[in-house]
Image 1 (cartoon, rainbow, N blue to C red):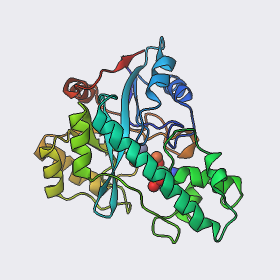
Image 2: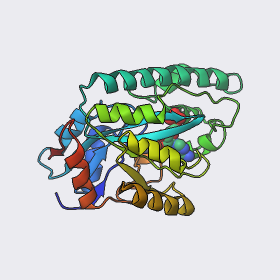
Image 3: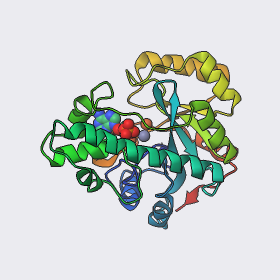
Image 4: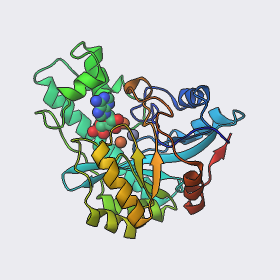
Length: 283
Ligand code: AMP
Ligand code: FE
Ligand code: FE
Ligand code: ZN
């Protein structure tokens, strides 16, 4: 339906603070025409999101933000409209979620040497069967009074360069694209030019990802640097990639507001046309 298009949001199925139902209500309240639910490494929120959107006029694009590794760097891949019953993507995302769970336990163990913090504290901040990440550890640290916000936790105890950090299993970025494409989905690199978190992918890498079926770049994102965006626009022109813009909304977990960046309707049409895995939910 007409209205702003926001293709990157999180619910409590991963590290957002609102249930899928609350997320859909927030999208309606924000006046969105289309929202994609893209929890980290999970499709568990899809069904609830569809049910919540029924009769609202909101279009829901089912998706996921797949974790991948590019050498030492963590690279996030937005996957849209893939078949949720595809064995490959089910197995891969389950393996990542399991790895994340054990990794979060290792981080908590490391932290507990210096701060009062238990694994139960973290479980209390996450949903059953959901994707566990550092944001849940941050919430546990807040509950214990060690930090005041997720932001402060990420800037200190949870920093990836700090002494408590641990990595988790993820497929390579190339394998990630292949997994999404094989499942009939459309792959878009999430925030590819964020400051400091990982280096901007070089042209040869992007070219290889395009050969594997990469469809687009999320250039409209608050964490992409101005210089990085310019380079990404050049790459998008050269390799004929779709350009998306999104909020990366996490409820109260981040300052990002719904529709602070949006995607052109023609781009959404292309995404829907390319996908063979499943269809949008027209609420
Ligand atoms: P993880 O995937 O467990 O390594 O944690 C990374 C997640 O934490 C990302 O998906 C972000 O949404 C979130 N995150 C990263 N930095 C911050 C921050 N400064 N404040 C709140 N959330 C953050
Ligand atoms: Fe997140
Ligand atoms: Fe991300
Ligand atoms: Zn995200």
